[in-house]
Amino acid sequence: MTDRPVPRPAAGTQLGPLAHVRAAPATSDAGPRRVDGRTLQQIFIGAEQPETLLAAFADGMATLPGELGDMGDRLQSAQAGADWPRYGRAMRQLIDKYIRTIEQHSPAGQPDSERLREQLRHVLGITVASLLQHDPQLREQAITQAAAWKQWQPGQPLDGLENNLRELGHQIGVRSEAWHERDELLLGLFDLLLENISELLDDGAWLHGQIDAVRQLLAGPLDTSAVERTRAELRQVIYKQGLLKQGITDSKAAMRGLMGDFVQQLDGMANSTGEYHDRISSYALALREARSIADLNQLLQGVLHDTGRVQQQAAQARDHLANARLEVEVAEQRIAQLENDLREVTDLVRTDPLTGALNRRGLDDLLQSELARSSRGGSALSVAVIDLDEFGQTNSQYGHAGGDAVLRHFVSVCQLLLRASDSVARLGGDEFVLVMPDTPGADSMSTLQRLQRSLAQRVLHVQDHRVPVHFSAGLTQWQPTDSAETLLRRADEALYAAKREGRNRVQAG
Image 1 (cartoon, rainbow, N blue to C red):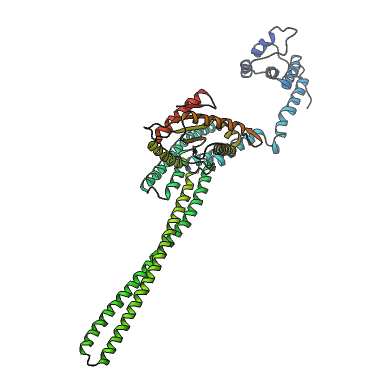
Image 2: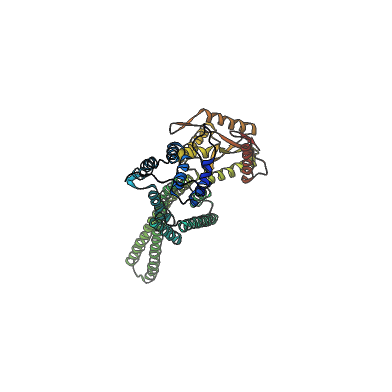
């Protein structure tokens, strides 16, 4: 096909805004003519001549940045000189360089629009649908919309698809809130059930530790690693409890067997004694009828024989009873030892499996004991609630493994620095409690400040990065009217006051 000039019509009203733009005076320093979007829209709507459209296209291209703008300048120059072959060559260059290469450089020759449509179909039909397994209605809508997007072709209307997609997103948002509320209610119901079971158990019941561990897990954010750690810890404890309970059951069964044997032997003695009584009665009758010394001697031999047999049975019963008593004592000692071991295994659940610090149940027991001791003797008791500064940022940057390393590092430094009588407990997340018996306020403040300095000196490395560990704390002293709840509340209020003042601070309250 040869390039042939397009006849240029006379200037007139058909050029519309474009003619007005061209009529504008130009200075020697002026760049290419620029036409705003509104003007271009009017041009394209009202244009009826090819030259008008080509001029509008050239002016529009000239407004673009970079090479496209340069191409627009060339088109403007060709159009201004009515050099339509030159205009056509520039258009072919534009098509070859900027339009055809889009499909050529797309992966597997697939246009970007097709790739985007395929990704949208994948998200709707597979990803979103898999997340809606528990809502068949929304899942079916997602699959239907995925099929509709797959069948859509360029040039077809998008309004219906867009409205359906927007409505699906709205419905998912509404339902997700309902699902979250339902999960919260179920967790609350489960926690209430565990609390009720715990109240029904005796103080020494073995289940207290397991129940408290699960309730502590439910109280915080449900992190997969925390759930898995608690599950592994409970399975280990339950396994050990099963072994110990089996030992207790076996020991009690042995005791029951001993008592059964003894009762059976006593029953045999009773039968023998009754038989002996009957024989003695028969000997008494025979004695009245005896007529000679030989008869009396024979009766005496029978009485002595029967009496000796009864005495022998009594001696055997006495020995058996002594042995049974000894075996019962041994069994009782074994049962007591097994029950003590079982309590110790249950106490393992009173420690935080991640850090080795006390958990909430361990803290409650400790505070109850220390408050009772302070009430009896009037000794000082200091309690501090500690919150690690910027822990959330560390957890986000280094992941759960990095956050766990920070928690373990903090507890290990506490255990190195504190006295044997002091204790550290983890309330959950990055919140801890220090219990310092026989420690006045000034001494406990010095202890916390020394702990801050020690953490600054013992640098933690996570993924080859130095991670600073510092904390804010609220410190309080025991008062005679305090309960564990009021003591912790006052320390917690002091902690928030320290947080308001800044970071790495200790506030007394």
